[in-house]
Image (cartoon, rainbow, N blue to C red):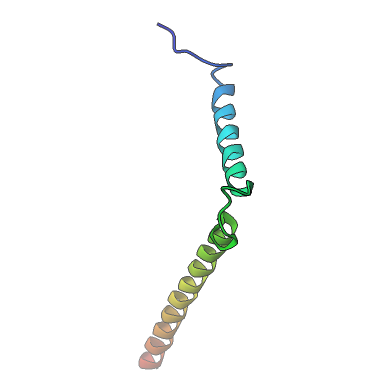
Amino acid sequence: MPTPVLLSRGLDPVLGIFTGFFAYYLHETHPRTAPPPDKRLAALVQWKWAKWKREREEKLDALERGAEESSRVVS
């Protein structure tokens, strides 16, 4: 039995992805279902990016301090 397809094997996944993004956009922008501004996807991504950058800087600073200390011990 052949697998049922809506339009074609190549177009069905594209249609599904488009429908998902469109549904999420409508969920974020509709006045009744819209989350508060600090809970929107863009704000959450900015928060996560800032957290990742801060943790990365702390890690690099710790590595740099460790390299400076080891170079002082050697010299």
